[in-house]
Structures are given as structure tokens and as C-alpha cells.
Length: 222
Image 1 (cartoon, rainbow, N blue to C red):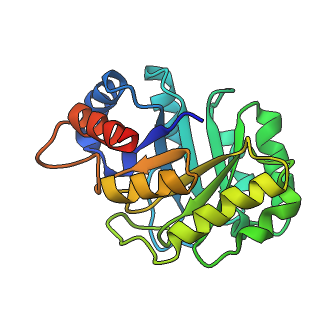
Image 2: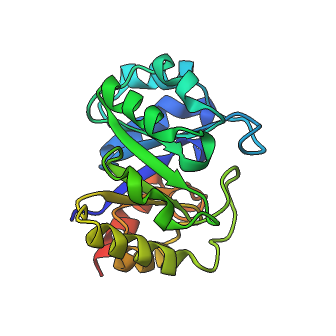
């Protein structure tokens, strides 16, 4: 399965965001990762729906929206997305999360389901018909710059094995949180498909976005 990178725009230079997106396009970025935080589900507030819709107008790179909010079903209609985009919600964010995933599918885009570090992978067993991608958080959601939690490698391996056991191994696994070169390669071997890249490997002071993206992709292949 192809390995893909998703650039975390939370870590970008927001004052020069369009220029950064143009550079990410040239670098062959597979997705633009946009975090939405409400200050309640996670202790931070970040990018919003108007920015998402504005970005959608200026690029053909698919969006990878990660909603870290309570009751995300209330906000799904606020975003203009298409079949190439992924809209991801947390298992822990709704009582009836399968209904939210159905809403996302009805919208015409791909549905993602995220789980926090403390949430067992087994908890998604009866939801596999509703999501296209499983996002395994490798840090507690809410802030950039954290260290990957100690059980991340085992959890991604377990997730990949369970998806095979459940006859849905075509489901993508995304990892998000401290995805450095070393961590990325390790998690790739564990079964991860999409890597959310931020300050650990992409938005670096001593490299251009193009060079950093190319270096990460090359490192995964070695």
C-alpha cells in the first residue's frame, strides 16, 4: 500500500499560508492536514471552518480534516469537501459516533475515525463498516511538539493485525504526533499508511518544506 504524507497546517507559517501550500504542492504532499480544536474536547483552539473553505478554493491537494471537538456532527455541514477529502472525528467525541460517520459518508467524502492513546483498538470493532481510515493518535491530542507515547508502535501493529483479522485490511491507518524520520519509519513497518507531519520532520528551521518532505519519503523507503 502506498505510503502518504499529510502536512499539518497548524505548524505552518499562517501569515504566509498560501505560499506554504504552493510549496507543499510542489513537494508532492498527499494531503493537507487541518486540525479543528474547540477548547473543550482538547485544551486548545485552532483553525476553523472559514479557513478550510478558503483553502479548498486555492488547491487541489486533498484535505485531511481532524476534528478534535465535542459533538462534531453539529459542524459537518460547515465544510465544503469532496470525495478526495477525509473528515475524521474521534470515537470519544460522540455517544452515537456511527451516526456522525454516516453523515460524513453522505456528504460524499471519506470518513476517518480517530482514537486517543488510552482508547483500545478493539473499541472500533463494530464500526468498521462506517470508516475508511483509522487515525491512531501517537500523542494526546491538542498540541504540537509532544513526545510519542511509549505504546504507539505496539498499538499501530495491533491495529493493523486486527483490521486484517476483521477482513478489512484495506482500511488506511494514519498516525499523528511526533512523527519524526525515525518514528515514521518504525510506524511504517508497523502498518501505518498516512503520516501527519509537523514540527518533528516537515516544518523545520534548517530545511525547506520541499527538502523536508522529500527527505521523509526517501527515509521511509530505506
